[in-house]
Image (cartoon, helix red, strand yellow):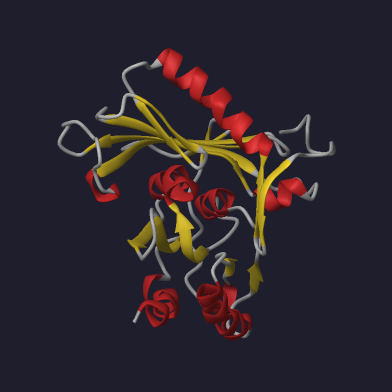
Length: 251
């Protein structure tokens, strides 16, 4: 990612609010080869497809470049996100819904800031080896909130008034364009919360565990669409005050 940031990039697919790069596929293939060579009895489920043992009880959940639009425009705010999940009962995982899986390990790496977040379930989250914790700010008026805008028209139409409302209630709003990094920023105490509707599993699996292990609240609900979620991730103080914005969308 670092090496190719300023170079021309081959675009595989575009939509009004998204870009798919050939480099996304190439990065996932590299990650896939490394992980499945080391752990051949696992599956891999990622933004760019699936691989490995189809009915494995363990799977890697991979977003090879989270923040692709940023990256394709030469904005150095993007990351690699890798989570390791297992089925809750240890039985084969073929065709299981996401609720049957539990994230056990999460890794998010920002190659431009050289920041590596890691977490193992039941242990403290770390940034470059140092234990991290969420902030203790509990007032909206003091909070920095990250807001994610989904790609669908309905989500965008809903979030525009939410953006306007929250702007007058919080210290600052930030639209950064990389969900996994937004989650790790909440985990590190840089943001108080991250809210989005329509985010995909591979964007949030690793960062969600990192946030939980840093003492935060990773509140996510499945919505219509494959592996899509509404997300209210915060430092433990904003479940109700921010959740009501998402409830409006899904009611």
